[in-house]
Length: 197
Image 1 (spheres, rainbow, N blue to C red):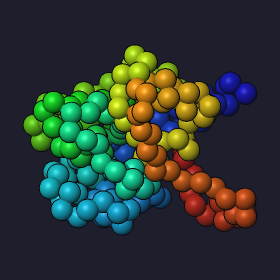
Image 2: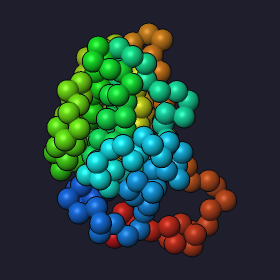
Image 3: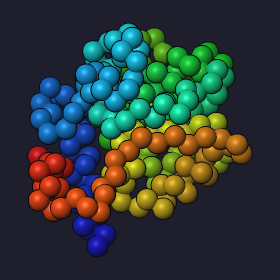
Image 4: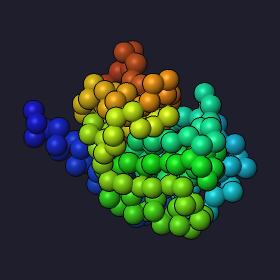
C-alpha cells in the first residue's frame, strides 16, 4: 500500500512540475486566468497580476469567497502552486502581515518565488513542504487556505490535523476543492481525465 501511495504522489508531483514549467501544455484540466475568472475571482484582481503568475493557476474554486485575509494577519497557503492565491492574500494582509506558501513540488516553489519577486511582494515567503507535515510552529497562523489540494492528499486526516495544529485559537480554515459524488459512474470518471496524462 505504501508503494502505491508513493506512486500516486510522484505522479501528482510530476504533473504539477510540468504545469510550473510549461503551463501552455496543460490539456486535461482548466488552468490560467480564464479559469480563475470562471471560478469567481474578480477579473480586475486576476488581470492586475502578470501572466507568469496566472498562467500556472490550477485552482478548482475561490477559497476567498467566504472572506479575504485581514490586514496584519499571518496566512498560510497549503499547496500554493505558482503563488497566485498567496500573492492576492499578500495584498490584503499588507506590510504588517505575512503570507506563507507551502508546496511539495519544488518547481512550483521556484515559480512562486519568481512571481513574488516580479510583483515586488516582500511579505510572502514560499517553502517546500508537505500538507501532512507542515513546516510551521503550532498556533502560528490566523488563516489557512487551500485550493484544489485536499483531494490530492493521500492522508487526509493528517492534513486536517496539521492545518488545525498551525492555526491560532479562533483562526480560520477556508478550502476550495472538488468532491466526487456517489452517483458518478466509473465511465464518467474516466472521461474526466487522469493524473498521468
